[in-house]
Length: 462
Ligand SMILES: [Zn+2]
Image (cartoon, rainbow, N blue to C red):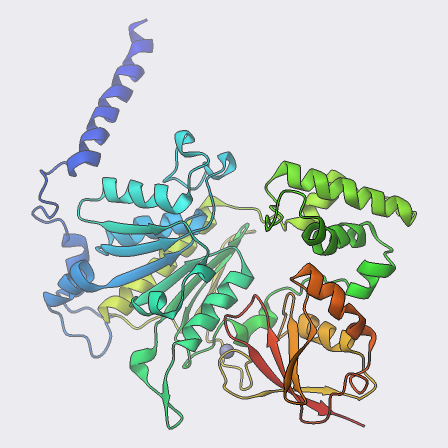
């Protein structure tokens, strides 16, 4: 029996010890005990073979990291937990974290700042509390928000922004926001307006880390063609001639949900809410029956509504480590940053590769070159819409198209508000000529992938 008690005793002792460490760092209340930052000082206070050519060892760099440098971490999930831990232990103390999600039981295997008691609470809040309690002197400020809740003045306050997101839309929005902060004088970029963006991404056993200097190096939209194309169904098919079970689910998701608002006014469809999925499933099933379509199941419904991404803890750890290292290099100016795209893959063996992603000359996000749209006058608005969503370098999600016609701002098509969608839907089947659009006409397109409206110039071909 004594043997059985031993591990229990050991466990309690470890618990007591870690409890003590969590309270005072194990070294009193002062925060900075002797030798606390020795591991960081080794990089900052002595020369080395890999340092930046202009690097001069100094004792001031550490002070900048500890006291001044302000970092924004976007996402407090798999990558976010790792990033916060790494940054806090590297000496960064002024960290903000933004995340709109709450903790789910399925997160706990890898999002190690969370415990079973935290389920249902905002990730940003719990992660910030954990790090602040565990690492003396660290001040993580949490924001249980969407990134779209903040404007320029919020983002401008940071020295560096790190993204640990699972959404391409959010990434593109963030990219667009940082591009909108750039200021140009006589066409020359003011370097002080640049906020570096370090972006990490993982999917299963694959991941990437990249360094973006907005306006100077390839941005997210410059390399959009690297992302796998999304499957889009034309609105006409979804609305009037469904053939596949997916069309029925998409109909309910895109048209019936916003119209019926089954869970109250303004309540969006939540892929993690079983009641929501059940509702969509039943409506899609009814619609499928009307059109003699088989194959609508609960599982398919969830699959269509929510793109499920597998998560691997070790991939997150590797990618977050790479991103944190880049933040440290950038903040300290002690090392040359990654140039500029690292891929990692351990599906079969282990593979990493770094290459320089190039800027796209006419990138719709960062090039400042007006975008051309070439269509014959007989093309229908539906075709323009399909181009905006399906073109590999645009990949918009639900573009809203407006034009100035006879001095008036006219919405040609808008999908996100049910009543306006219904009113503007007939335009989709009209030709550009019928809509009164002429050669050289400017079209303003708004989309959730960017905080700014993208201007296109219509080039009518004959
Ligand atoms: Zn770009």
